[in-house]
Image (tube, rainbow, N blue to C red; front, side, top):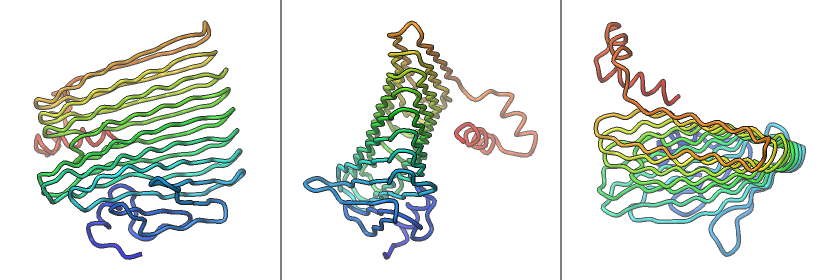
Length: 307
C-alpha cells in the first residue's frame, strides 16, 4: 500500500496512523480500497451491489483492533458508504474509523458514512470516529455520519465521536436501541469555526430492564458558525439515562441545544444537563499571568474543554 503525503497527513489526524496497521483493516481513499486485510478473528468482506463492508468479529474474540479510516483528496468527489459490524457474543473489540477530506479545488467534496453495529450478548466494543477537513480550495468539506447501534443483553459500548476542525457542513445522526442490562457511553466533541454548520441528533431507546446510557456532548462554536444539538433518551423500562450538553460560544457563534427525555415506564430514571456560555474571564486572566497571550490562553482552555 503506497500513500502520498496528504494521505499520510489525513490518516495521522483521524486515526493516529503513521504506518500500515496491525490486525484487520480497510483503508479507503477517493472511493477505492487501497489496502485491506482480515485477521483470524475478524473478516472484512466487501458488500455486493452497494459501496461498503461487512465486518464480522467472531464470538469470544478478545483484544482485536479494526481500522477502517477514509480519506478524500479529490475535489468534487461525493460518496455514500455502508459499513455493518457484526460483533459476536462475548467478544471485545476496538474499532477505529474516521474520515479526513483535503479539498484544494472549487467543488464540494462529501462523504456520507452509514455505520451499523449489531452487538452480541455480553459483548463489548469501543469505537473512535474522528472527522477532519483541510485544503485551500473554495469547495466545501461535507461529512454526514449516520450511526446505528443495536445492543443485545448485557452488552456494552464506549463511543468517541469527534469533529476536530475544517468540516464545513455536517449532519450527525445516531440511533441506539438497548436490551436488558446493556450499557452505552458516548462522548461527542465538536469544533466549528468560520461559517460552518453542525447538526447532531441522538435518539437512544432504553428498551430492556437495567439498561443505561450516558451521552455527553461538548461543543465550541467560533466565528459565525452554528451548532444544533438534539439529544433524546427514551426510557421504555426500568432504566437509567443521562444526557449532557456543555458548550462554549465565541465571537458570533450560535448554539441551540434541544434536550428531550421520554419516560414510558414508572421506573425509568432520566436526567439531562445543559450549559452554554463564554470562556470565563478569570480563566483567561489566570493563564495570562503565567505568560500566555490571550489567544494562547483561549486555545489552552478550549483544548482542555474538548479533551
